[in-house]
Amino acid sequence: MSRLAAVLAALDRGERRLTTELLALARRHRQEHEIHHVATDLARWSAEHDRLLSETLHHYGPADTAPPPADPRETAPSPAGPRETGPMTDDTPPDLLEDLRALHLAVAGNCVYWQMLAQAAAATRDPRLTELVEHCEPQAQRQLRWTESMVKSLAAQLLTAS
Image (cartoon, rainbow, N blue to C red; front, top):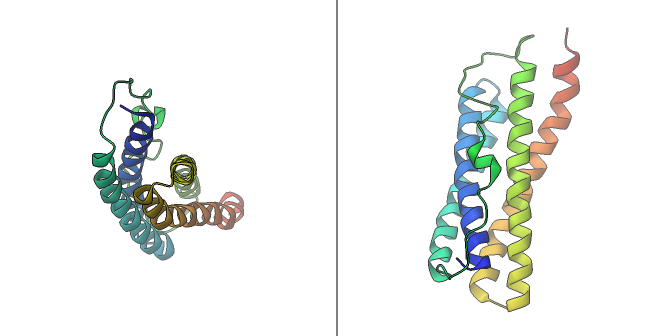
């Protein structure tokens, strides 16, 4: 697989995983309305990114080089496994914060791949890559800002609640 195709494939897997994690977060914390609704909307973005990446990857088919090592995020068990939560209580903060922390790390990993693709698109002046990056990368950055904002706004409240 070419290096470019390998990055596209890794990002495709990352966006697919992110879609799943965002929807799981929305389900687990459905009583937290902002979390539920924004995570659902962001999952739609990741699903669209996955679709666009799959279409783009088709044009950069495999080459003779070996694929990159598997992303460790894909083989490690999710720290935010399936569970249901109710309204915020004394036992909720670690769960919600841990979910947001894990999600933030997944989004950050994808953002690094988007930056790599942006640099490749600029260097090659490839219109297909440029269009993909210009559409998806700002949304990925918005996902990153949201997860960071949620951690910042909820950490003090949830960790110090008595």
